Length: 429
Image (cartoon, rainbow, N blue to C red; front, top):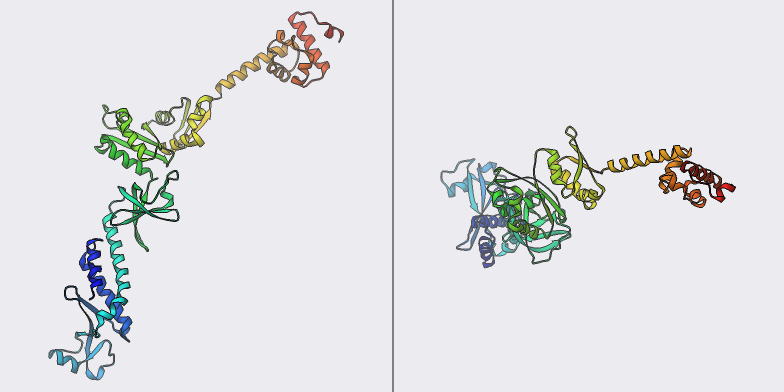
C-alpha cells in the first residue's frame, strides 16, 4: 500500500469522522474492482476477497475455488482439481471450498490508481450514510451554518463536517445571502434517496419561528405556554396563536417579554419580519377578533358547518382588517383554519340612503314629481321646497336632465308650495 492511500485513510478517519474499518473495507472493495479490471478473465471468478494490512502496507487478493474430481475439472476460474487440492490439504474432498492467493506481482503499486476512484466513491457513500445516521433524528431542529456556495437558486450551507442545502422554495425571498454569511436554519428533513442522504434546510418554514419562540421563551420550553398555531408569509408577516395552561400567566405577555425584549430578538433573527402574537381561543368569534386586530369588527357571523366567518368593519377599518394585499385576512384564515371573509359594513350607508329616499319622497309629493326625479333634485341640493325655489333654471336642467320648460314647471310648483311669489322670469313663462 502506498503512502497516499495511508494518508487517505487517516484523512477520512480524522477529518471526516468515518470509522477506520469502513475506510479499509472501502479500500478492499476498490482493490477487488481493480483486480477484475487488470487480470484477464478475472471477471469470471465468482468469489474474490482482498486482504489489506494497513500497518505493513501489504495487499493480497484471494479467490475461493471449489474442489472437484480431476476428470470433472472444467472451470479454471472457480474450480480446483482434487489432485492439486490434496497437495495443500490432505483431507480435501470434492465439494470443499479452498482459498488461493491470486495476487499478481507488484499488484498493490500497479492497482493503486485504478482502485483510487472506486475507493473514493465508496468513501463518499460511507460519508453520506454517516450524515444520514447523525442527522436523521435532527429533523425539526435549528442548526447554524455558513453559506458555502450557490447552485442556481439553491444555497449550499456548511454545517461543519457536513453540507446541507436550502432549496429555493425554502428561502426567504426578501433575504440576500452572501458566501461566508453565518445563519441559523431549520432542518426540514433528512432525505435518503437515490442521490444519497441530503440535509434539507429552511428559513421560510413556519416551524422555524416556532423553534425560535421555544428557544427564547422559557414558558414555552417548560410547556406553561403553548403555541396553538402559526401562519406565515416568510419575509413579510407571521401570526402566532398562543395559549396558557396557567391562568396566572399571560401567554402574549410571556412571548413579548419585558419591554418587548423576547419578541425583538426573534424579529431580529427574522430580519424585521412583522410578528403578531395572538391569544388563542376555541371560540371562533373571540379568536377572529384577536386575529384581525387592530381592526374593530362591527358584526361577526359564524357558519360552523362550513367553517366560515363573515365579519363586517367600518370603511376606515377595512384596510386594517384585510391588510396589505389581503395578507392580514389571509393569515388569519390559515391560523384559524376557517374561511375568514371581510366586508365593509353597509348598515350606515343603507340607513343614510333610507333617510335620503324618505326626504326625497316628501319633496316629490310637494312638487308633484316622481321619486326618481325627486332623488336627483335632492342630491343636487334641493332637500326642501325652500331650497328648490332658489335654484336657477340653468342649474336644474343639467342636474335633472330635463328640458327648460320642465325645469320652470318644477320651480313654479316649488314657489307655490313654499308660499313664495313667482319671480318675473317665471311669471312671464
